[in-house]
Image (cartoon, rainbow, N blue to C red; front, top):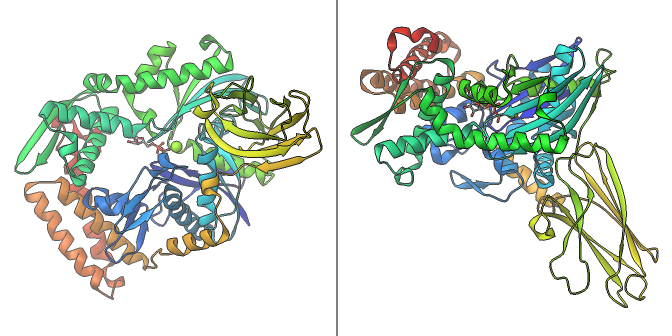
Length: 576
Ligand code: ADP
Ligand code: MG
């Protein structure tokens, strides 16, 4: 029985494990390591997760969803066809798919999974991840912070001298920054900060906004399909500019007209400035919390897909006056790290000595009043953010009024002075013997473990003792509710692999049809027709060769989609 690691990303998810003395990634049904975190619903009502859903983002915008991870821990409803889903249900579908693929790749049962989460996820968001795992039937005991996983992998990969690192994980939807001390076999997270709504998606949106501004289009007047199409175009331009210094032209067809806007690194840097500014603030916060000056950082390590953006690396170089180090495959580093964590959990001989300590991302406390007239309680912090985990603290709070019989301990997470401005996690009520104000008390203990689970105990001076493990009340579902959700999510199709492949190719051809124009568009149309026939047929095996031909044809068309946006086409090789 194996332990696997899962990097459940906003854009892409990966599965890893530790075996034969090293960490490795497990491929999905297409033989790929990255599974797009996209969910779609097909015409027949079945749900599709991964590559097929990603292909359908543009062509079936009302039936496909991506980037829902940024909404984890909220009650935001996503409409998929005529069904609604909550963010943790969508994540459950992704986890279920990863679980299924991992079991197939391994050919054995999975004992446990460790999931990485953004370091800056609060309690509600972490609970939502756990609930998603539960809905996916995935046995998860341990969560690990994404940048901590990256630090762990970096340490294993380098194992050099003592180092103080700044790790920046800039992905599709989240940014995590951590200050890490590495020495001997220790990986010590010193401070973390982040922004759960900042990533490559914001850059795509900023490019799309720029496009609208230049062409007098209004973003809100575009329909959903056009919005997705423009965002995809923006992402293509962005990725192209990170690979090549040449400028490009983004051309977008609206009705009969084609609007175009040129883009180069300089313009992109200007567009991204406000986003990079926010990144800088997050970095500054990490330094403030760690109490370590920038000059003491030995190395800045970049992970996450968005760190491949050349102008981002340039910007950071300007900030630190030195070139950051780039992990070889930055969008896989976290997954490798979770795999190392799985190896440690398995007590693998190669890793047994490595020890990692992590810190608390947010402060935890309870609301208190200075006197009875005080009607806006403030935070009394029991566990400061950046405390080393596990953390534990006890404090006494005294009664406020004469004859008071009960003390409410309301539990909050956050950094704001007024308690109500923070995230409320729960409440305990403890009885105390009636007495003069300030004579009786409640002793409150907060214990926060490495998985970000908070246990609160409150003991009254009269002996009344209350205890709670904090779970998000909205997500603290009853067994029936979970069973109901499970039944709803149990709609994964059971198509044969050739049929799945036909469907993937069809979705891809449909997207290319939307993106191409002229003759090539007609080629895409023919492929669509043929694939539709093939999907109806019973003799899939015989069609293997034709399928391969169609796949290659689509590959060629894909090239034209890329090429069409480039200004200088003498030098197109490096775009491939
Ligand atoms: P997550 O961990 O959030 O799932 P990833 O680390 O896989 O995300 O990063 C995905 C993001 O990286 C997307 O916004 C994507 O557009 C961006 N990205 C991927 N490759 C490049 C590139 N070469 N240049 C710039 N951005 C890129
Ligand atoms: Mg990531």
